[in-house]
Length: 145
Ligand SMILES: [Zn+2]
Image (cartoon, rainbow, N blue to C red):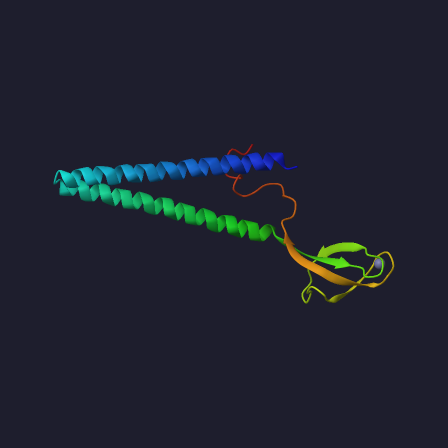
């Protein structure tokens, strides 16, 4: 099991989540200060603090958006479409990469390796293959030289 990968990505997400929480908290603090200034009719401070707060939330939202986008692209890249074949004669099952034109129920060109009968497609699905060496998220942080 890729135990280490799990730890790396957990650490990464913990760090990311902590950063997000930090940014949001600071933004809320600015909002709070802005509201205090509003109450004491200090319009300049109020405006400045509220603007800082909005900017902070904006940064947090942008970072979150980028992260989700990168994560999705990353997952897509790792996905592999597989076709599952089934031999109607001897019942043997086989997986192979998806080929264009495959659909469930189709009799494929593939012959059963056991008895030579044409195999039928029983399912087509996306599978995340075993992890490659490293995710690009971890490559920037703390890599050994
Ligand atoms: Zn067979």
